Image (cartoon, rainbow, N blue to C red; front, top):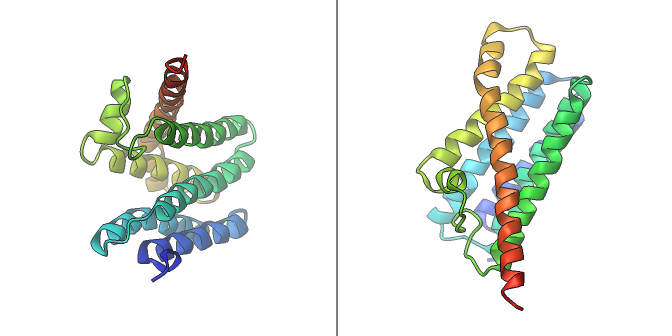
Length: 199
């Protein structure tokens, strides 16, 4: 069977389609948009499970997974930029930081001959905790995604539960972007260190 048709990769394609639907409906249909975005993000949980269950782990699938994560986050952050004009620049900064830190992390992992960006060694304790403490990554991603979805819904729907979830989860969104910044520094350090050791 072609890697293109591995089950986890089919889930990845479905995630991309959901993110594209969100791009279309994001400015006028908040319920549909929140649902398709959430389905796209839930797919991130199931593609990894499927890859392990069916022994269909692949480099292509790993890249598809990360690119889909970045793409779907970028879509929502771009919509939040539009919906919150006074603080929109913060969402664009977050978007740029998310893309850059993950690109640097992936590149440094390859450049330093490490197996996976999530198991790469770092001198920064917060990254070791984030990636290696069981369920830490899952809960951080869950809470930061909750923050972005509730920030989005809060513009359209005046529900108390959305506001509570938003206020509870937004600090975790800020923490996740701080971790992205540390990840960017860590990856840069490793690239420079390896480069200097050549001479």
